[in-house]
Amino acid sequence: MEQRLATEPQAQPSKTIGKAEFIALAAALMALNALAIDIMLPALQQIGSALGVEDENSRQYIVTAYIVGLGAGQLVFGPISDRFGRRPPLFFGITLYIIAGVAAAFTESFTLMLVARLLQGIGAATTRVVSVSAIRDTFGGRQMAEVFSMVMMVFMVIPVIAPTLGQLILIFGEWHEIFLAIAALAVVFGLWALLRLPETLHEENRRPLTLKSITQGFGFVLTNRISLCYTLATTFIFGSLFGFISSAQQIYSDTYDLADWFPILFAIGAGLMALSSFTNSRLVGRLGMRRLSHGAVVGFTLSSLVWLGFAYFDHLPFPLFFALFSLTMFQFGWIGPNFNSIAMEPLGHVAGTAAATQGFITTLGGGLLGAFVGQAFDGSTMPLAAGYFLTGLAALILVLIGEKGRLFHPINPAA
Image 1 (cartoon, rainbow, N blue to C red):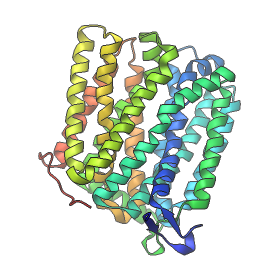
Image 2 (cartoon, rainbow, N blue to C red; image 1 turned 90 degrees about the vertical axis):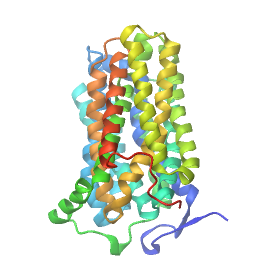
Image 3 (cartoon, rainbow, N blue to C red; image 1 turned 180 degrees about the horizontal axis):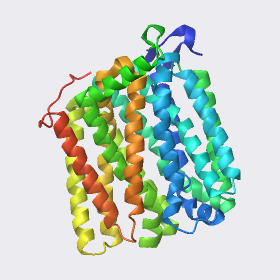
Image 4 (cartoon, helix red, strand yellow; image 1 turned 30 degrees about the vertical axis):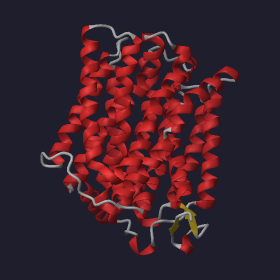
């Protein structure tokens, strides 16, 4: 019999929601973030040309502006969701996401494009805060890590298909239609959430929206050694991922002259992350979050070092680059969900504020690190390889600090 999630009847449109639908809905809401980034990667050159942007690296700011808004917005919506529940801020954010997407479609100014993208990122911040908070409201321990992995697996379907979808839109239309398409999908997901998403934050667990309450909630996050170290470690890992996203179109198109293959090659990388997330969901209950994620961050750092060594001494032929890159990408699925779960585990009493603080740090920090890596693009893959290695090494050091030098030891019993 399908597992059902008990919820608060007076605050939701349906009294129960199946676990499978809950996971799918949470993944769909979070996927709006990936969609707003990945679907337009094939169109960055056309958008830049249409808006008079001559410097190719400057086109990356279309991605960076969105990521900055996504990170900053979470600081605002986290405490709000702890006070008023998960649903009200979510629907406000989705509405802002839709309006900003339509505005971006019709702008003729690069400056206004960046403003629209910033606002769209702020709106999208609610989808991450609410999804992560709702999962933490409902699950704990290894079961939470399993659910996060399943959400990430479904979530990663979007990067698999988004560049191809963007390419198809460009074949039959113009870049303007890309922004209209993501706004339309936000309408669909928003209606799904309106009809089916339960209110997971019960009345007795809501926190007052006062300066003292907010700063106290942030204090819980920033003073908990495990939570802070794993949040910062996730930030560095995200930095490498955002660095690749920012420069992926240039690497495949300019470095390797594979512009026509870009959507497929990008989809393969995202597919590896989805496969990795799926295997994590199957293994985490037996092996634990720490064993899997610690092994993955060590593997990520070492494989990036090998990649950097080849890139430093010679121009990498594409097959060798893609093999090393794919190996590092696979590690993401064992790092992200587990690091996120470990960081959230001690903070269930302030889940919204915790999700907001961690999301702000990981998204904004990762976005800025990614922008730095992306702006270092010089026609080769060496800056990206160096970025992967240095961020992986920083993440490993932070995990060692958080765990007091001890790796691979299980903490949570099997759920």
